[in-house]
Image 1: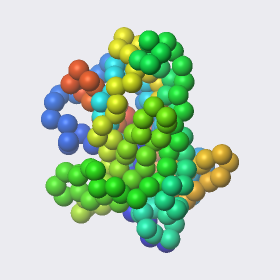
Image 2: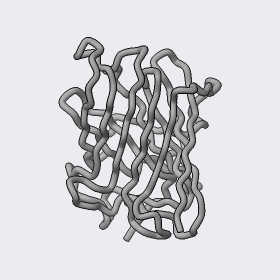
Image 3: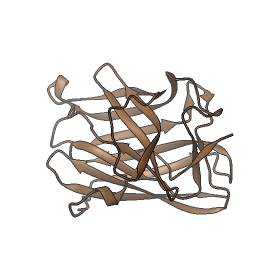
Image 4: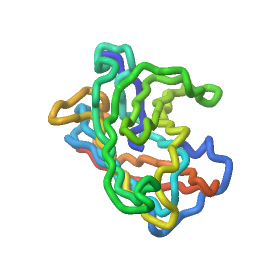
Length: 213
C-alpha cells in the first residue's frame, strides 16, 4: 500500500511565513491520535483556539507520520467524507451572535486551484464543506520527504473581538474509519507545528505534542 511520509494534521510550515511570529496568550493548539500505538492507522483530532480572524494556515507534520496518497489503493473514493470540523464562534451572518457550525471533510481530486511553493508537490486535497463555504486544504511534499498541510485561504466569516474554536477530526466519519493517517513506527513524542496568518496580517506559531507507544 503506497503511503507518503507526512508530518500530521489539522490544521503550517514556518518557511513560507516571512513576517515575524507573535504569540497571543489566548490562543492554543492541541493534537492527538487514536489509537496512540506505533504503526497504527489512526484518527487525528486537533483543537485550535484563536482570538483573531484567520486568513490562512500552514501545518508541519512530524517525520515518520504517513498518509495515503490520492489515487493509491489505500485512498477513499473522491467525495468520501473522512472527518469533520466543528467551528464555535461569533458569526457575521448572525450579526456576531454565537453558534457552532459543522463542516464535513471530503477527500477530493486535486482541482488545480492551488500552486504550492517551488519544490513542493500536491499529494492530496481535502475540502471542508458547509452551506456557508468550502474551505480547501492540500497536503504537499518536497523531495526530502517533508510534508505540510496548506490552507491558503480561509473566508472571514467570524467577527473580530471574539474567540473562535476549531475542532477537526480526520480519519473517522459517522463511525466509519478510513486509512488516511498512519502513526510513526517508532515509539516517542512527536511535535506538530501550525503557523497562522490573520486578517490583520499578523502571524503566530503554535505547537502541540502527542506520544505513541
